[in-house]
Image 1: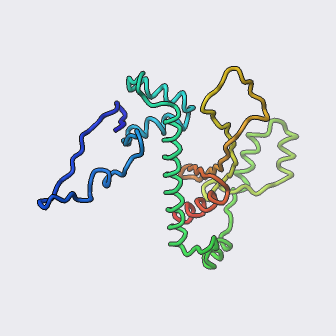
Image 2 (image 1 turned 60 degrees about the vertical axis):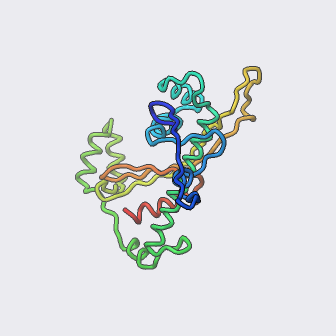
Image 3 (image 1 turned 180 degrees about the vertical axis):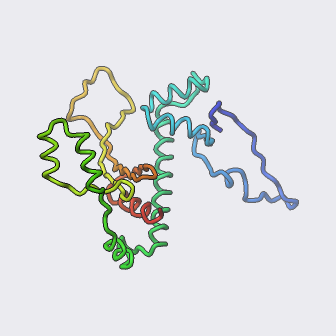
Amino acid sequence: MDGEIGRFEFMSYTAVESSGNQPSNRVNTLYGSLPGKSWYRTMGFKEIAYTHGSTTESYRKTSAWLNRIRHQVTGGTPSRTMQDSSEREGTRVLNHLTQASEAILKTHGVIGNTLPAAVVASANESKPVHLAPDVVSAVIEQCGKTELIRQQMTANPIPYESPHHSLNISIDDVGVKRQRDQRPASVPETPTARKYAYQTVVHIENQLGSYRLNALGLTTMLTMLLAFLLHN
């Protein structure tokens, strides 16, 4: 078992019935079978290795850092293993969010990405709340560097939504460079040889705080976003 303070091995036992038959509820039935030389990972390990590791640094740096703080200079976690386990954990999280989103949409009567008529009618009836003119004028006085700029801003009135009654949503497609398993020093890297991994990020913000969603693809992201808004 891989933990945040090191690696441990435990002996497992199987209970035998009086008739001599072994029950089916063994250790691997409880925790799941692991292929090859795999290790069960604790919550503490996942927090250090994934939350504070591979989500912010490369797999090579995370592997070296993790092995150093756990005093596993030899026989520690290789960067390839760190990459595989990080991707598997990320896949589990995304699958859970996708299933939770689908369950939320079903609860609110969303069938085939189609909102119920009552929800659509309620959304169409809502009106935006704008800032009062005196509030906007005070901001113009503070932001306008010159009298000419203040006059131009005053002559072109724009309705500003009140931040206390609005929800800001921004959707961005983010591309990051794919990491190589090995980086030969003798092979120069060219722009045409670069490969990127793309993901969709959504920022949600209102007066109560901010939230961020991350998914692979716009379709999956919109499903999660709609479920998030309906649930909250």
